[in-house]
Length: 79
Length: 163
Image (cartoon, rainbow over all chains, first blue to last red; front, side, top):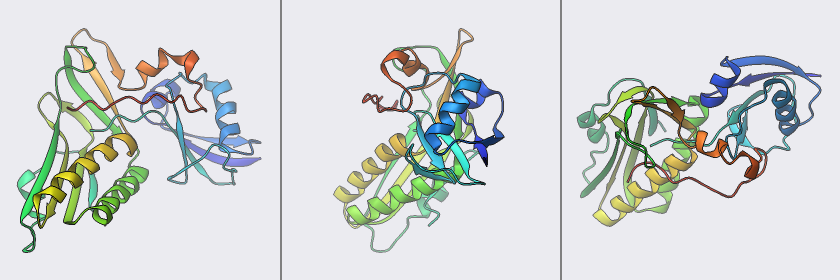
């Protein structure tokens, strides 16, 4: 098990009802973590999600390490 | 560094422009994105709310400006994006570029705003006159949920909202 901090923004923040949560998980990758949290929160379908670990973009197969901070990034709309 | 930033208060454009002053620059090009009252065929947008993932957003914004400085013959570039509640007509984003000559200044300015819109983690919630609200580019995708599993590339990309 690893301890992960998950931060939520925008549509996901509103859906989950908090800005962040601490998760203790057996998930091996960020993709596994997403699948686990999706079962718990039933995230809304928002199209193509990206993901960041420790404030850098990464891919879904990135291994999770204890203490990592993870952010799921819905389609952006700056400008 | 510090060429890309988020602001929660209004932006002083005179001060922004002054950041780019340079005796070798013969041109300055800028872009301002303004909040408008309609989007994607929907009228009655009353106001907007921008939310940013600031730690990653600043890094990605700085990377975009570094790319512009490497790619175009320019002397300086800056970008500021607003966060929080904005009203119709407010400045949402500003890009400024200085260069010896105008061609590079225009091209770099265009490059920066296009990349910022596609890459920097900023989200926009529109509030409508009928009391509804929605996250731009997210709610529309939700309507196509069956076509676009979240962990796979759906291949479709929405264009930005400014002309």
